[in-house]
Image 1 (cartoon, one colour):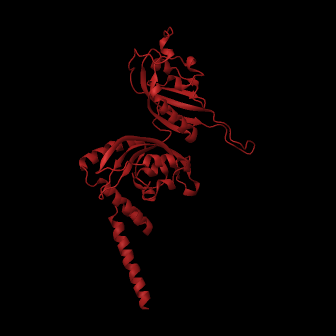
Image 2 (tube, rainbow, N blue to C red):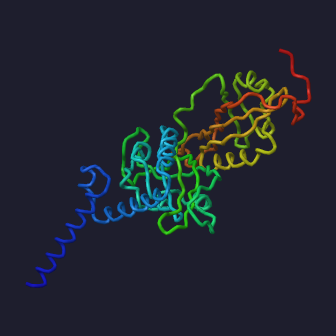
Image 3 (cartoon, rainbow, N blue to C red):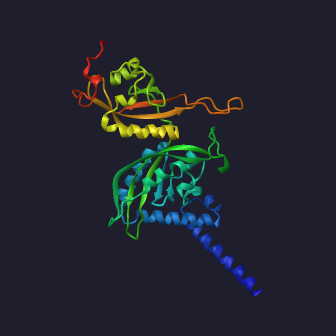
Amino acid sequence: AISREAARRRRRVESDVFGDLSRLLPLQASVRAHLDKPSIIRLTLSFIRMQALLRGENRQTEINWLEEMYLKILEGFLMVLSTTGDMIFLSDNVSKYMGLSQTELMGHNIFEYTHPCDHEEIRHNLRLTAGWKKCRENNKHKDFVMRIKSALTHRGRVGNLKSTTWKVLHCQGRVKLCVASSSVSCLLLTCRPLPLSHTLLSTHTFTSQHGMDMRFTYCDQRVTSLLGYRPEELLGRSIYDLCHTLDTSCLNKNHLNLCLKSQSVSGQYRMLVRSGGYVWVESHSAVIPGVQPSRSRPNPSQPLCILSVTYVLSGVEEPSLQLSLDQTFPRYPR
């Protein structure tokens, strides 16, 4: 009887402690009411690490940076990853894009939710330089694409984890390096789902279709006013022919992402102008799949094409510079 009373008292104290801990979490009361004990511990550790991340810095600078980041994530969400891949923080709008709430994801490891084929690329981006003596920012920009589980159905409804699909995220950010005992090192990212919903056509964009080898199979008329090429003279040619030599690695990375993940954003690169010089552009691309497999056609068909929307971000730079044979020939008559 004494041991049963002691066990009852211990459980009561434990429940009180977890109740007090739950009330300290910066969450709505309706959310806190549905947390179990493991979730309370997981979220508490995440918020402690997030506080350590912000400690010892100029708070106004950090607030300004967060505001700047939030302006960029109107079409996405914010994610903070530890060096081991733990999701220290996610903005509460993550559920809009993933169908999973902030409290469901925080404290879990990113590798539990991402595609196995993307794990090595994520690890590469999480590797930090050792030997820093104090907290500081690593100016090297992080830009990569990964696939993550999503509970959203094609109609935008929330399903369950057993029926998740892969959503492609375009992740950009920077590394925050800390070795002080009072803080942590992490990767600060904005994550935007692809294809981007704000990919709108304007006078400064042109659309094109390519084979899987990136050769043009179609290009719209706007390319003439933007780059000086006629659509018909681009057919059968590779987009690499129009790319500045120093930026081919950017296109290679984009091409690889398309082949592996079906969607990608190229990042900024230089595209040659027909009359000389170059302009800065960014391409948003997706692989258009072929006929879906069925009983009559069990084997999946080859992709139809790659569809790209290219944004021209600048005017013509160094117009007298000739970087390809195309630019040495006289321009065709209008």
